[in-house]
Length: 320
Ligand SMILES: Nc1ncnc2c1ncn2[C@@H]1O[C@H](COP(=O)(O)OP(=O)(O)O)[C@@H](O)[C@H]1O
Ligand SMILES: [Mg+2]
Image (cartoon, rainbow, N blue to C red; front, top):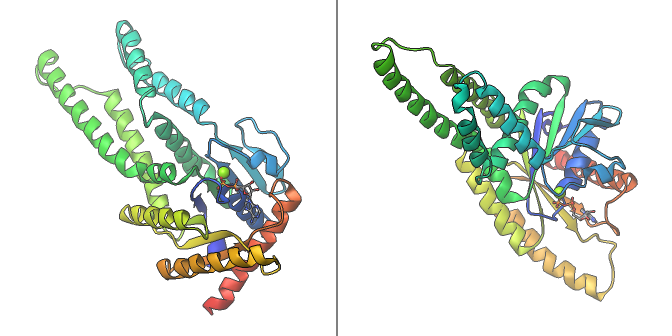
């Protein structure tokens, strides 16, 4: 049906509470119903994906129905895993007398801002590079906007940071060679490791920037702040060469909602819906109705998914 449903990777972003997790779960469900093998990954620390599928998850990939697996990433655990990985890498590379000091430095780095994102990004990187071949699609339900943007722009930042590290490493190596080895170049396993990591970042970056493979969608509500925030987020991502083509405007007051109060709310909403059409004129805008209850069960999720599907179909009609 649509190009939109033929992507390998989806990132779903937006402010907290607008409906990212619901939309991600619905998209994953829809893709799986189309016969695709799908992995839904939640990177939001406030997970509720497991609840939607009535399943307890323990940070592992869990099958929730035929051709649909779910993974909730626990960022604290990821940071620990990441740090232990770094320590493992270093083992054998530094003198044992230095090990304590090196570990102390690594632990300090682990507590610094950004370490959690680096760890999360590392996990996303390995999911993309190592797991993608087992699935037709991976849907990433991301944390609220600011976080997502930092995450998605990380390969670029990491690239710069890596280059800095590599440069420093080269210099140290040169000095070392001059002092110890009468100028003969020495083998440097740390340098090799850094290069290896850089290559991985570059590879994942290729995925993230390939718009035939990766789709970014933003979820928002027809209200002033989500519109502003979405606009800003889309611009920032654009600067990093990431193009957002699809917006889900969720919780739109349905026609059948009646009463004076609802009429007033609808009038108010209309203004914002027009604004959305204006501000995001060149994007695919999907309007999803507010349901009469929270989406907390699989049955509710199915109802939401049917709405998403019919919106996509209607969109296709419009585009013809
Ligand atoms: N269309 C909708 N109709 C009714 N409730 C909704 C709708 N979309 C989302 N919700 C509810 O809104 C809340 C926030 O949704 P969620 O998907 O968790 O947002 P996010 O992941 O962006 O924080 C949840 O309680 C969810 O059940
Ligand atoms: Mg969420």
